[in-house]
Length: 99
Ligand code: FES
Image (cartoon, rainbow, N blue to C red; front, side, top):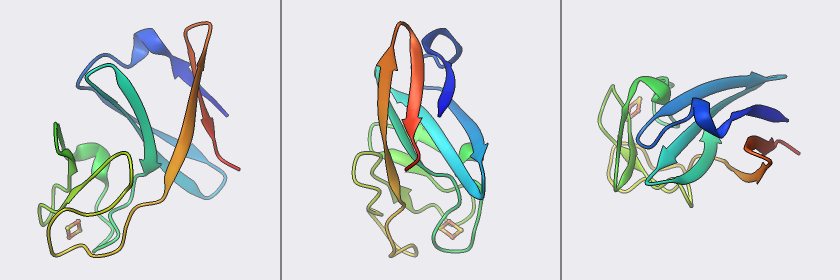
């Protein structure tokens, strides 16, 4: 799916997208774009309202931080990885491979 233009997602910013039943988080970490599921695997907080840092995205509710590349939580209480999606950039447009 086409998400947005690269101009709409600056460094350190996150955006949320819905596609069918999927709730997706798109994040720009130091110029690299990542897409993961947006709902925390612990207690369903919306990660788009969390904090983006070098370590990944930190859940606003109980502060588990998820690696954006792998989706793996780096600390408790979350234990289940987020689903990750491939991202492609073509002519300044960001596409998420939702499968
Ligand atoms: S809801 Fe995200 S860590 Fe609890």
